[in-house]
Length: 381
Ligand code: LLP
Image 1: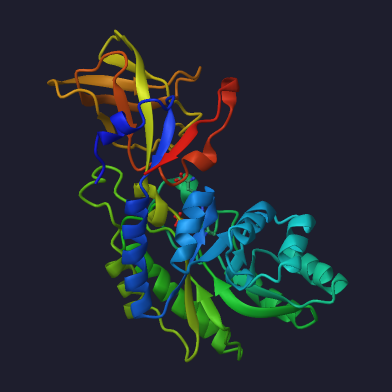
Image 2 (image 1 turned 90 degrees about the vertical axis):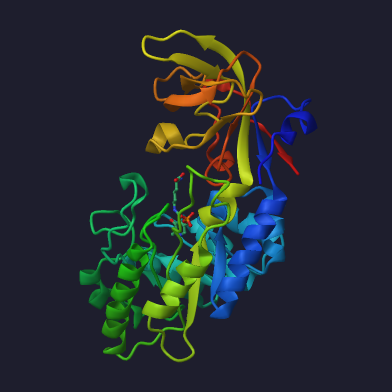
């Protein structure tokens, strides 16, 4: 549970800073493992959500694999001690240099998104006298019912191989001597809170598997990606995501072939709730409808609200006065640098400590130096 003790403990740390609660992370990982282990499911942690070394080390202790989307993420996973045979490499624009990094580290699998990409991997693997394991990322055309910027599994999206191209791809694979097809991969989007969406994915995956089986192809693993959402409005009430129903649903609706393994790539659900962005109020300024609370964190520290109209719970840790309405805004010269409009906060004054909750995923990793702002500090407890 998040407490304002943070104010005293880190009173000397300049704001804004990210605070990670390793106890929350551990509780989350325990819950995840106990549910995933029931069905012998393999979970790769999606490094893109948060690639802080301390977080990566904590996750590794629970035996998760790594889902990487760049050569540097592969190197980071290796540096943090993730087993190379647990590293999957995804992304539709892998450069030759990044593919070579994957080949040099003999990673578990390249999740491939197009025939031209597979051709290049085959060629680069041949240069090294190696055989690269690949999975085909298939676009299942399933609506994730989430923000359109984080929807990935519709035909109109740039991700994955479309069904109508599969026949060609399967035919072409026969002539590639340095490629081994070991899996099918899917990822339909992120921050999915309606679990029935995953039921729809399972049904579609079953159909696609039937298509492969009818061509005598049975792969070693199915990877259903990530996407499990978290509760941004009520973090304390729902600190730990509903892993029980999530994994249970796949167990109920996805048909695996004998000896086939099921893999997941979760990012947000693992790290979102353990992180908070801590900021201070710089100024209170009168507005036409509400007052502005101008804080020292902005879209440079947490881009999600500006980029996806995402909302995070905002708390004033310094005040318990009656509430007033505020537009909580950052200092950056962009109107979209706004964390919340007309939100209720205890009466707020200069110097009050503000917590922006559920910021552990896609927060620190997306920080940037726009306006030449400093990158934030990071603390743990
Ligand atoms: N696998 C693939 C292929 C992905 O593209 C992603 C996320 C994941 C796994 C992990 O998804 P998760 O379990 O975290 O939902 N920056 C955005 C989210 C972008 C997600 C990109 N792909 C945000 O702040 O909401």
